[in-house]
Image 1 (cartoon, one colour):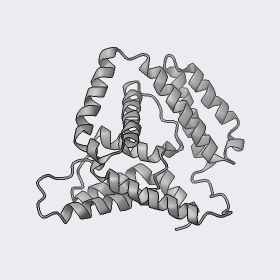
Image 2: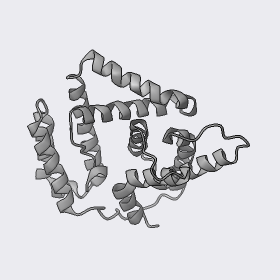
Image 3: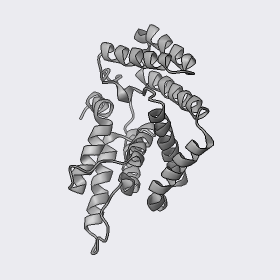
Image 4: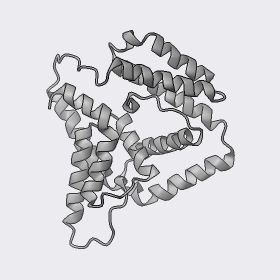
Length: 230
């Protein structure tokens, strides 16, 4: 697979490919991912885990699970696959470092019109929400210089991710102590069985992704990242 093709696959299908692959590996097509699972995918995306590494890690985790003499419990969370996914991600990073060269930039994975519509819809939604005018103005500024940003989508993604962080921080200030407690309690409940399978850094990234996602949903805030361009 070429770099350009892989980039397109990551942007268009990262979340859905992982969801469908986990369901297929589990053997239950109707199984729904939990909020923790979606936050975990988000943390992998933010950490730059390649889609192929995530899919291979899921396959390996289930192969090891099926090879056990006794399987007392079904795999009910994507978190079970974390260690295998991160191992494959590290191998991918090592291979990329060994083979790095002067490759040409990959072709943009979506039309300019799709990106423009994504950013304009996000700005409009933020303008309609109380307290997010500054973030909305920043998004509008990006749309005004869109052609320049199209020349470096990696930098644009970094800018959008920074704005999402700011958006989440602003939203948290509008939550009560009880709201924050309940979110944290739900996170700890879902994460408890899998803490031993993750490093401290992985847990910290997952916690941030879970709580940010909960905040976005609570206030119906738009996602800005290029991974959400339709």
